[in-house]
Each structure stands twice: as structure tokens, then as C-alpha cells.
Image 1 (tube, rainbow, N blue to C red):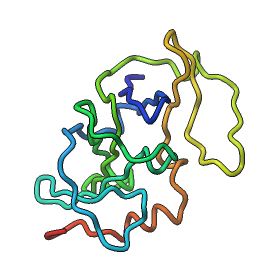
Image 2: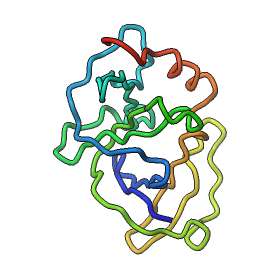
Image 3: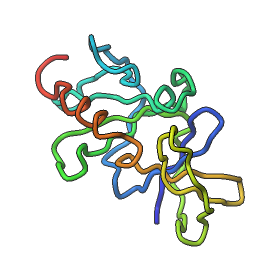
Image 4: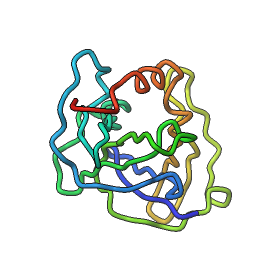
Length: 154
């Protein structure tokens, strides 16, 4: 499977490239009043207001640092609706790599209090988390994201 690699804090992550619509440079985000703390803000992308989730905040690694390698990964959200987008803010977004989730998977149990990030893999560079957004976000979080605006000015 072709995957996009990136970093959250000191941990390495990957997303299945088939689920990614586009990767764009980090832009200035407008905060939304009363939005969850893990929502970094919104921006307008091709006429659509896109909510951007700060993966660093969501995973307890502070705010996403303002690095040149910081990018917004755009994905359909919910995955079955191709018109609506969600942005994921991450750093070191720079590499596409072929990975084998079945051949590299490590047995790992996530503690009940922590979000399930997806499969944990081992490669020549160390540990790699294959991020599964559907498992990472609770039903309540998904509902909060779906309630945010998608049309007009933010």
C-alpha cells in the first residue's frame, strides 16, 4: 500500500494514500468560536470551508509547530461523502512510501484510556503508526466536526 508519512511530536505516522485527496501548504487558519480545542481553525479551499484538525493537539503533543514541513492533509469526511473535506495538520509531511501493513504489523494493545491510532508497524527506521481516522475519532468527535460550517465565509 502506498502511504504518506508524517510526524506528530516524536512519533512517525502514515496514512493510506488512497484516502487522501490532496496535500496543501500550511496556511493561516481562522479560529472558530466554541470549536473543540483540537480544531486548529478553518480555511477556504476552492470555495469550501475546511475544518482543520491539529493532530498534535489531539494526540497530546501540544500545538503543531510552524515548520516549513508542516502541511494540511485533505481527506473526504466522512469518508463516504466525497464532496466534504477535513484537513489534518501535521509536520514532516514529505514522503510517500510503499508499506506492507500485514508484513510489518506488531502486536500492540492500546490502553482503554488512549485513542486507538491504528496498526503499529516496524520498518528500518523504527516504529510507524498507520493512522486510522475512523478509529481515532470518537462518534462524539465526528458529530462535532460535522456540525462545523462548510459553506460561505468562516
